[in-house]
Picture (cartoon, rainbow, N blue to C red):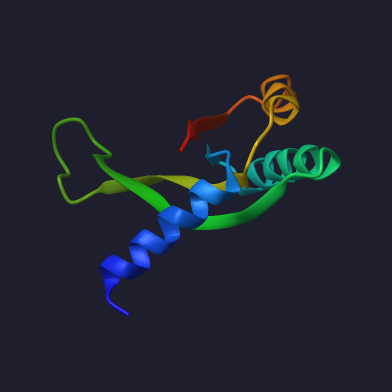
Length: 119
């Protein structure tokens, strides 16, 4: 089977299923808060009997900063700091209006960033 045939079969399967897909990307600096937020989203989707794929852990984005300790002399004395951004991906298949409404009414902790796309 060629890739073109495989792609058309996937597209046909999506048309048969009807609705689309909600893709939720969740980001946070602390992994424990992120996991608690993802668990809350998963519980809400499970309560409304949605088909859920995930949570899929995405690679952690690490940003490093190097700063001189002294302002003028001692150039060899430096400090390094880093920020880690943890990410998770959740797919909800065939979402209905109740699922979308319940997800918009969720109260998540501060520091958690959510991106929702309808595909």
